[in-house]
Image (tube, rainbow, N blue to C red; front, side, top):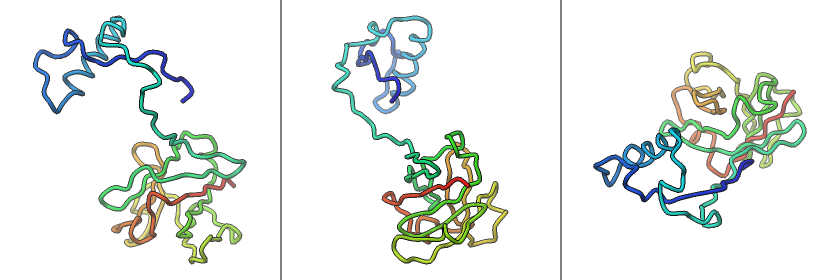
Length: 180
């Protein structure tokens, strides 16, 4: 978002594709060869027909909202195990502080320290403390946890279960992270 596109083309010049383009694997047959040609100095306008910048699809902003000591996060992905990946990266500002997290509307609180005044909910649902851990083995089977996933994003899980199902987390959920 900080660097909007200044030029775009439709990659329709077959000179810069692999010789046999499949109908299902354009990443290998078109995108990768075009990227290699760009890296080798071929001007972008040789790769295809110009496209108006205004016609490009704008993806939603997945940046968490930062307001003082509160970070508001939303789910990016729920995997087939029910683990929920939120849009807070370990490298985001304030993410390395000691965290207290509040998931709304299910009322889940997670973090290394959960003071009693952080145990609040919007829908009078009992709050559940979740430790911020490095591995699933740091909590008992069936217990909830939060951890920094392999892609660097904050994830919420249940050891041996589905956090999405058991904690009622959906794509509309909001995770409030408070730095303490």
